[in-house]
Picture 1: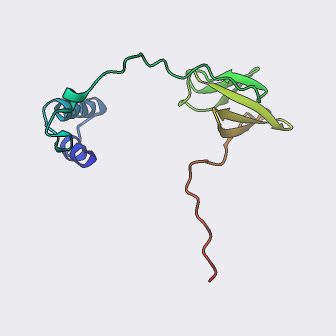
Picture 2: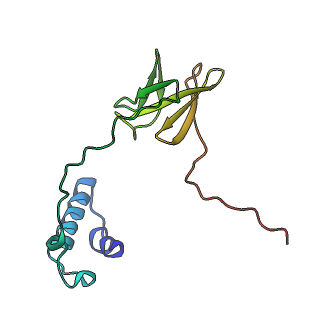
Length: 143
């Protein structure tokens, strides 16, 4: 599917983001409604699609009982910590994060089960935590 998408919707690329999005939308419509697929017995995906019986309600309200505070990230991606404003991430607007003091004036910011970074409440500088998703490379064997 990805090779077909690339071939049909990105070569050549559109002149701007809106035109490119229109190419993607056209591809999705064609791919799901106008092309039979061998993997599903030459049927169209739209023939097999069933909407979910219940509405998606998103995440439940996140709470962090083991942290010192639960703070909601602002629309512009900041954590308001008392009078301090720490630039955090535009990925989390409206989401609650946990904040816990781990050392004198050093605070850990967590989202769900993931530690994302640390900030110093004096400089408001945010540092990334170790990426839990990065590839783990073992050292070369000396043998």
